[in-house]
Image (cartoon, rainbow, N blue to C red; front, side):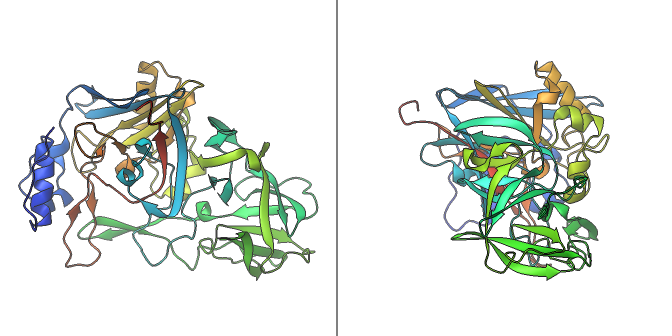
Length: 434
């Protein structure tokens, strides 16, 4: 595919129309995509590309029920030739920016907090478990599957929201706030709250259809007279207690997470006290290089077992019959498979797949739906990859628009970069294998 060259200084919409036209998607006006995305409801040609040895990307159209369609883009990684690493950041990045140096592909990562209110965002947007560069950025509030790099190898396992940590060198046990409390908690036991405890609100909007946000006044830990809530913040010298809230009411977004204890309050829970996580579930934290909580398995999503995700995601993408673009992950000792099932919300017949259809497609491909997991989907679903024919390219969610920040700003097409992500899966290989 040859991308047309547009003169410098062209209007952004003209450049976008040329980019889309080179991909066979022809539009008269970019602004119309805010109301009608049916131009994207077209089957992809069959193709296979090889960003590196041991890494293959394939495209194929898939017919669905009710005369609907999706396009499946599947990235297959030979783990003996390439590596997968979950990466995350508070500031966020665009997916194509990760495909540099030895990186040959990147895929949208775990579910993160999404709101249309730029003035109230969490200090740590990753929901539940996030580990980066052997530093625990966020602890889980509930038991969830997770992708971990454990002792150098990728591993998917269910991670219980329990573990141990030290504060000022003193040992404590901890458990997630969405889990049943221990029947007989040991002295000094801590309860973890975080951004995953938030509730998303929806409001109608005349231009964009809806807007999402969270009410700061109610986005706090529960009030409890005997509780002491400790806000933990990641600093350049490690995690530390940066605020104390006797009686609860700590802002869920103020730090990486909140640790709650009850009277009698240990004296070493003080401002500035260092916090060091030593164990997550039964895993030594020192053995986990990086990690991200995953979405439900395809089987659990199809069966409606999604309570652990629904509250913090707002309108559940797993509710019965709802069609969304989806990103799925399957892994064994030798191979990692990442699949985007594409769709655009304003394209009739091409709005994605239901949770039930996703599980059926897994079975059709010979995969056990109980061993295939959801990554962040919807308009986040995307694969960026090194294209031997030109610059880093992308598939999935090519309809994506950047919403206006004020009533007079136009929509901007941002289909190649997509949404700014707080986490992703990065595929790297050596120069020799490339």
